[in-house]
Each structure stands twice: as C-alpha cells, then as structure tokens.
Length: 212
Image 1 (spheres, rainbow, N blue to C red):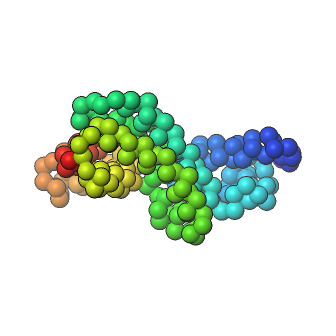
Image 2: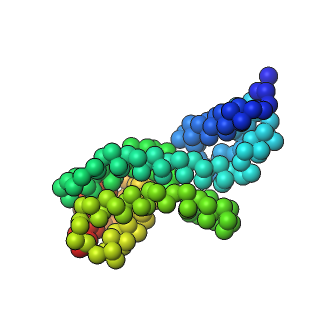
C-alpha cells in the first residue's frame, strides 16, 4: 500500500526529508546514472507525481542533498578549527571534514557537470547563494591560520582546495585492476599510492606553502 498524501506543512516537510534521506542511502550504493526519481518513488511506495511535487528532476534533488552537505561540512570545519593550529593539522582538518561524509565527496565528484549544467541559471544561482556560508567559513579559517596572507593568495588556495575536493571520491575508489596496471606501468614513477586522506592532506600542505 502506498503512503498517504502529505497535507499539513509538517507532513510536507517530513515527506521531503524522507525523500532526501532515502536518496542519500541509495546514492551511496548506486551509481548516479542508475538512480532515478522513479526508483526512489517506488522504493518509498510513493507515486511518481508525489516525488515530482518536491523535486522536478533528479538533478534538483541531488543539488538539494549537496547543499545540505556543504552546510554540514561548514559546521564540522568550525568545530575542528576554532583557533590556529599547525599547518599540517590545518590541512588534515580540511581533508577530514570532507572525507568524514562519504556522501559529500561522492556528490562533489559529479555536481558541476551532472547537476548544475542541467538546471539553468536561476536554480544554480540560488544554490551558489545558499552555499556561500561554506566558502565564507573557508576564507575565515585561512585568514585565521595565516593572518598576514594577502587576499589574492587566500582566494587562490580556496580555488585549489575546491577543485581538489572534487577528485576525492575518484582517488579513494580506484579499482584494484587499475592500481595493478599503474603499479606495473609506473606512469608516475615509483611513487606509491597513498591512503586517500594522507594524499590530499599532503597535497594541500604543498599548496598552502604559497599562502602569504
């Protein structure tokens, strides 16, 4: 039996959150291309129109998830870095606050091409506006860590950090066959594959040397 129609404001909010929560669970075990609103509706025993009432497209739903994740990561960053720390600890905290949410790094791996590009200017603008607190917090934390740094160097590091985080999921999910091939052919020489958090922390540490 399908679920009853949500009627009150509270029921509507609860239904929307139910859809988001189930989408999170399914996305962590399913490729984005294989996940549809129809599948989510069926899993929740909702009609397809019921899901489309809240989200007009799969892209819209997943951008809503990503917004939640950006703001949750912002909170983790504030809690992890209330004051200045060592440079290594600073970079490690930036990495950990992303990797602590497997959903966040997986969403980051696809959002620019698969989500924003298909939603148009107005929706993308609102998403960017809603997630500005994350980037303002990043700016504040870097300024706190490097009080003498120029704005230009801070903004450059922010850009590098943002782009680097979109590759976290791919690096941490390299197939075993690919690892074996890379080890045999050695396109990058004898450098070993590092554990993902270690790799990204070291990379950020090398980039942050230029923040001044």
